[in-house]
Length: 120
Image 1: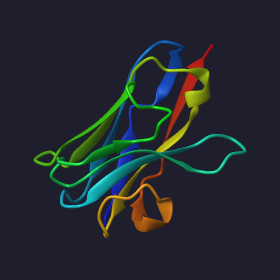
Image 2: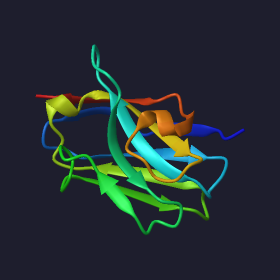
Image 3: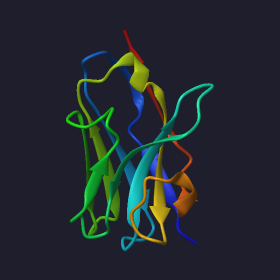
């Protein structure tokens, strides 16, 4: 069983930065970050392959967010810069058994989420 624990969420002003983290019980999976805002469906944010050679972002965060991982520490990070109020959501990390994907159903394991709130 893969366990994922997110941390680092909080309240930040628009234009600010925040780094959220995901502690995983394994290191050899493609990992993704997704988010879900109130009343909206869960959406893809970023993904990274297990070796970190392939990275992909949602268009809405490209150039502002950076995904990274440290396999020795079994950690995945999402650095979020130039945050906007519309980035407010619960952010989830997820592990994929089938390689990198932008589709949430392709991820078998999920963390409990961490709340990110961006004030105007």
